Length: 209
Image (cartoon, rainbow, N blue to C red; front, side, top):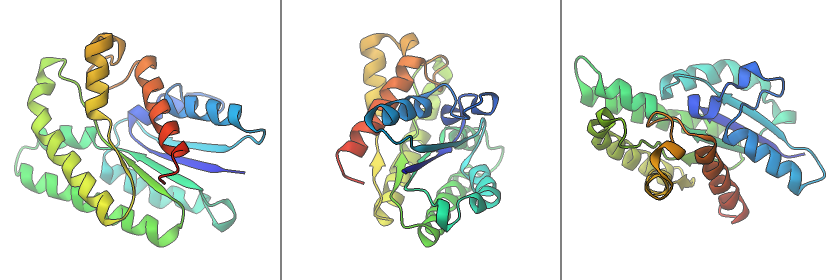
């Protein structure tokens, strides 16, 4: 039985704690539905996304939760989508923004180091994304671009895939209308989540993990 683990913030969370299956109502649930359709054996899909999580809070949570994934229940794949709350923290830092930026990058690197030391399964790092509406988010784009570049370098150094999303989601918003893809410039509509799920599924099927 395949075991898929998703870590992240509210984009992954999607209210999973308030649902009996703990999958949420976003891309994780959509992925689970498609994996069930493709196989006669129901996979295990665990949603560990939490509203407001930064890299630091994800790491702290994982220290408590990882014991649930013992050797006989080890994940077959770990997916991480994180970073948008870190962008907010960096942008609103009252003191040294460069220090705040460096801490995020260092924490993610150390987290991937620890995952590699504990698990042999594939790890997929997904790109944090933003939209240019509402207007205040435009001023965050430079930080998002820098963080994405840093995440890509970390992924390369750990020999794991980095699934880009920002450009394609923004192109989709231009094509379909931004209100059809995002509800607030950060979180996704069901159409946006469907794109995310399809992108993940296509990448998994490609065998590049």
